[in-house]
Image (cartoon, rainbow, N blue to C red; front, side, top):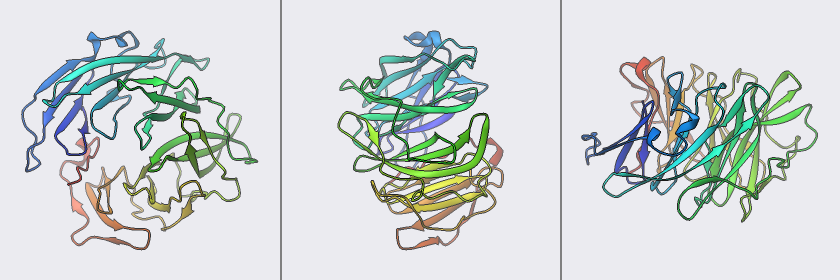
Length: 330
């Protein structure tokens, strides 16, 4: 299963299995209590597209910033004829109420594709992800969150989102992370037909009132990731929206996020042993976890200083059983 925190107060923890979603209370000391509710996703519309996992890992699930709504994708691999996002409301007592679903039927010529887990805009009105098929991400996907909380495809969003001009190839969006004040950080991979050039750049986008996105960044003023990033890294925005962490097999690197202005480099690559997950709290602390080494590094990171806290790294037992990390801000 994979765990997700519900709400900014850490009241509930959600566990996603193959078909079931389970809800557990979080006690005042941080301990997990007995299960308070469970729903079977196969009992609701969207189940025709598959289950919550393919090959043993969830295809996608996310909470909005309020912690009221939980979105989960149903999908059964490239042989599937569709993919679907279900929406659930988390009630005050931990019960889950199904609100609706949105099917995403897109055929890349080799089978139906799914969307990656969306990043939710700071105003909880929009979500952004990519189509994901046999040959990786191909284009942006825009979603909207209705007043009912249901996640739907945004009919006013165009997949032909303006991209920075004149790269030495074609840009493909690979990762996205929302920032406060209606901005979005995007990791762009530069490719030629059937050839990945191994070049990745970071772009900043603005979000308009209808959910459309645009960028004034150019090929020349966007930062290019170091060549040490041999595979697609992950990205996590700090809660302040001022720092962007890029992490993966090479370690973790911090960048200044400057709203609509170009993103700028900040730190060198830290923790060369690799980082599998990065999370932030509300007090400028960055938590970087290495699954295989079983080490959790904690940094205090602001736009002016970066330092590892006393006692870091911490040893995490049974590292090979880890599938994720959750930080519950207090």
